[in-house]
Length: 439
Image (cartoon, rainbow, N blue to C red; front, side, top):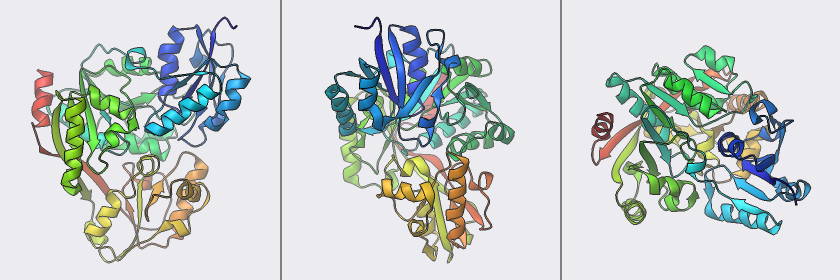
């Protein structure tokens, strides 16, 4: 019998590291022997550094692929496996639990009381029931509203630490120079660039206690921009959860999205313009059953295109946000819709000439339509993305990534950018709710 409980944290370079620094550092009776990694490429080749792990750890903590979980449970004589990542179908969660228990260990899900931080400032958090529901356009809209009210929002983004963890302990992005200094991936730029374009800094990294305290020094109010369908790491005073009208039922089928739905003060049903009436009815029925006191509003994501006339009668390659297409499960996005709306001659299907990890993504996620996911977690992957784009011989690239491809790839093909903007269509105006919250 060991003097401590041996543990593995199963994650994806996000809440796993945060859970460690909140719950596990406060409870040294639980000793983390390893992390496992999934969803995000390449993170299983790194370690969690001892400098972040703290005085109870004499060395770095190894990170392994989640596929090795049974062997790791045996190797480290594991007592508990803690699941600490998001956007998982319920059957995936329970299959993982069954695997862990079949190896003799216990399976644990930490609740918000064990990892949420308390801010000294008011907190608005935006979460979702699924990846790609439209959190970030809504969060940016709220940030702009707060700026109109002469308040300084401290925008904190769900972690995306794909580089050296010690160097990413606490990051503040305010200019393009900051993005380059941290060698941000395409995925990171997709989340940070839009705030920089609004003239607002954004905070992220690994050590969210330090990140929160740093943001508080210059902010009147903390604004949490969630990742996937994960929890807010900061305890919210106003919790807004986004549901996706194009994926009815997902609000009660994916972890931890249903928890966000149940806890929400406000639920925004997004993308209603192209949804079936039966889909809206199903989502509203689930909300009424699980969270009848929540305020429910409806909204759309308005497609905004720079120089839309360039799309007409052209052979186009559509590039969309990677995570939304991959584990988010979406077949198409704003770029594909813009191609149809402005009558492109042809949407080129990149699956026939994709290379390297881009080609592997199509094999792993066969639901994707004739669009290119903007994957760029490493220099090699960005090169493969560039090669795939150049091979297309398209007349035009429709860039529907929030980051802007021109910042991260080299191409001779002209680019037209497509953006989403939040637009409320029904219910109590969110602007009134924000104003009332501030009062």
